[in-house]
Length: 135
Image 1 (cartoon, one colour):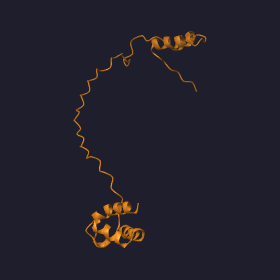
Image 2: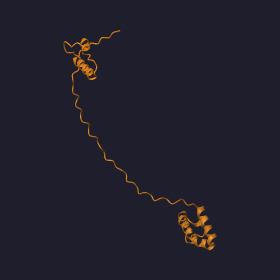
Image 3: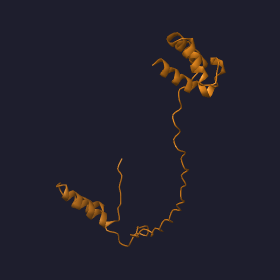
Image 4: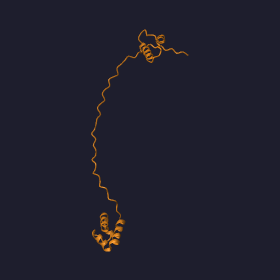
């Protein structure tokens, strides 16, 4: 099977010859001249060099201001949770180490007669004061 290609572009033949010469191989000039014959009249489908269309400038992006919500001040770390069992244990520890009267006096500082009279808000300060008494 033989395929014949008729190229009507002398510039292409010249470019191929220049490439062959640059690659230091035997010139294919003679062979190409047999194959590529100059066009007698310009090829109607020839591509003309056309400059690319001028690009329209991209529209400026609209930048909207970003509002950053104000941060709330960092909350103070919460004290560890205190439960009533810790209060009961502290009352018993003071009573055992310092006597019953010391435990009653400590509860009296918080207007309480027994540990159950203390409010949850008083538990933390009561435990701190009990530690002072025991310390």
